Structure formats: structure tokens, C-alpha cells
Length: 280
Image (cartoon, rainbow, N blue to C red; front, side, top):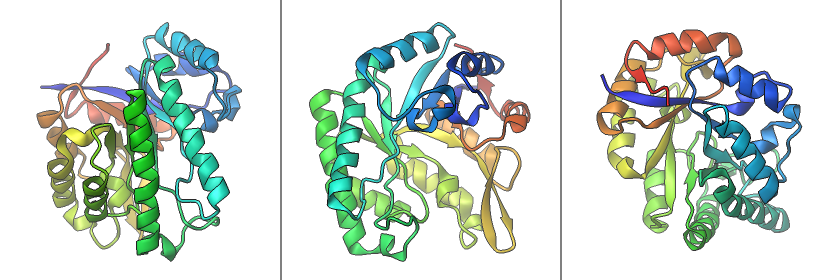
């Protein structure tokens, strides 16, 4: 049985200090973290990083057998206010520059919203898509200049909300430094959940070597809603997905996302039904 490398989003651990975070992570077979400083205020971090702080964090994680696989910089790259959008893009470019101090992890974001209030049907317009293309092209160019990589994460309610739009984006921004986070649950709806195996196949086939990491979560259909739940707690085709991953991406990075602390051990047990977990 082939294996994978398991991690978790750092902000899904209930720690109140960096020391506590590292001790909690050590309880599980995690070898890497999806690390988003802006989401770690509870351990004393924030969105602003310096080379010294980044290097310190890298050394602390490394001393506990952990690396940063994804450096999360979740800014709205299509913000309707041009000044705020420019500030967000500059902030993301700063993270691309700082990646070297974390031993060059992938810097990732979602595409955001063209509304300051979050979800908007305007996200599905041609204008929203065109703005994504412009912002992503700029970030891809910056990543190329810096010799690092950035990843985009498609998701429902965002301008890049389907595999078809994701394909169009990659066709228009053809950069070797642009990758994708594979999270099929992000694209599952009450309308397509019965075709989830087809969605998985299409995702893996269409993006192949562009995929840089995989998110592990689950979903349930309740009251005509698709709700995200911890991996192993829902209706996701987990075995199919995991076996499809390891057939093509041995020892790949996989990350629990949106998992409740009490569900981590059961989720690991569920995962081990299908695959071995690398311990280094």
C-alpha cells in the first residue's frame, strides 16, 4: 500500500501558543502544516511577517519534525476597491518573497469576492472572471521572478467556482509557477454530489502535475444544503478519492481542513483504512 504525507491546518488545532501548537501536532502523525499566520492570532501571530520571524517559525517547526507545506495568504485578490485590491496583491507578493525563509513552501489563496460583503452572484460574471485572470497573472509573474510557486484554490461561491472556469484560468495564465490545491468537496453541491466520482476523476485528469496538495474533508447533504464536516463524518467518496490520489501522487501532501479537534483521531483511523501515513 502506497503512503501519503499527512498534515493539518495549524489554525484547526486549539492551541493558544506556538509551544502548545507544536505539542498538539506531535500527538499525531503530522509531518507538515498548512500555516496561515493571519488565522493564528490565538498564538500571537498576525498577517505581518518579517524574514526573521519567518525563519524563527521555520526553525521551531523543524525542531518538532514539521515543515510548512502551504503558506496561507488568504487575501481578496478581486476586491471591488482598487486600492484595497492593490494592497492585498502586494501583501501576497510579500509572502511569495518570504517563502524562502520557510524553506520555500507553496503560497496559496482563494479567489475572494467582488463584493465587500462576501458572497455575491456578481462573482459569476465575466467581469469577475476577468479580474481574477488579471490578478492571478500578476502573481504568477511575481512567483516566476522570485523562483517560488503560488497555488489557487477553486471553490463554490467564488469567481473560480467550477472545473471549467479553472481550466480557462490556467489556459489564460500559462505559468509553470502556478499550481492548484485539489479539494473536490469545495466544488460539490446538492446538484452534483451524486456525480462526485466523476468530479474527482475530472479534477485529477485535467490538472495532473498542476496539483500541489490535497485537502481532506467531508460533506453531508441536509435539508437541501451541502454542509462541510470533518473527514470521515460524511458522504464523500473517501476511499475512491484516496486510492485515486496515491495511484498518481505517491507520498503527496494531504491536509485535514476544517476538522474538529475531537475528530482528528477518528479521521486518522479512517484514513489508515485506505493508505499508509509517512512518519517522516
